[in-house]
Image (cartoon, rainbow, N blue to C red; front, side, top):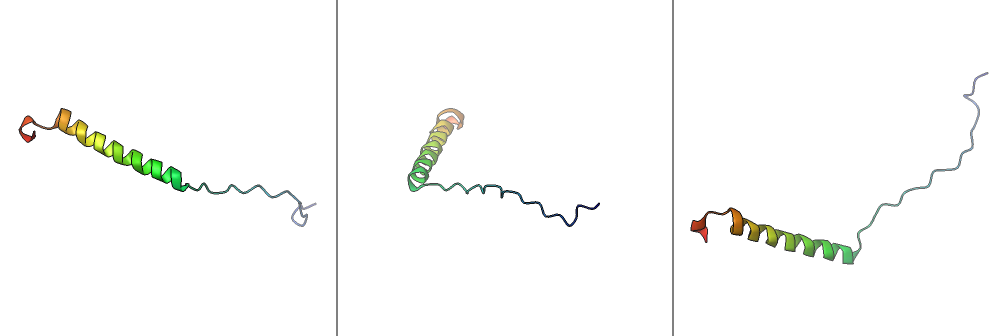
Length: 54
């Protein structure tokens, strides 16, 4: 016999809610990016740039 016409009742899978970034987390990530960028610029001028630029 064919199973094409049989309705199978199954529980719906729970939906995963998309992650939302809170305002405080966004501020922390922004400040970390700014501090990281300043740190990279400092490291460049401290260790990589030619001496004539300083």
